[in-house]
Image 1: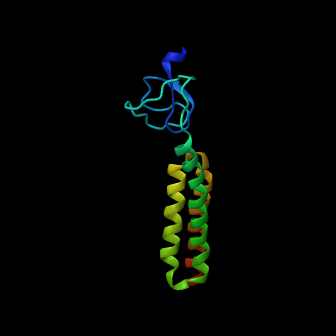
Image 2 (image 1 turned 135 degrees about the horizontal axis):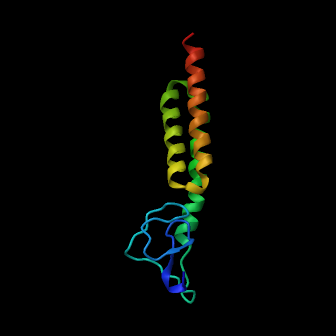
Image 3 (image 1 turned 90 degrees about the vertical axis):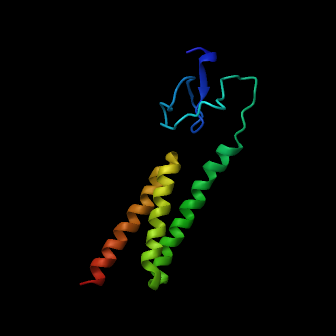
Length: 122
């Protein structure tokens, strides 16, 4: 693959064939408009990717706060659990590099919710 036949993935930043619709590394859909070709003389802005990379940590922190709040605010347990699960799934889908952090949040929330339901309704 020559330098002129490649571009960078809009999601993970790895080199991919210029005519790719999906990245073979991360699976992200590539838009045909605004493709960034491999021109090493032109700088590529990393501001958007750094914001996206740091946002997952904020989402996970908020999700764990909602999970912890379910133990304190017992009148709102179901809503807090639902929010934590939604945030966990969102992180898993949107931030593929950190999908296991999102999976851990929603799986632990559902397991604790199921155990609480069994104990409560006995």
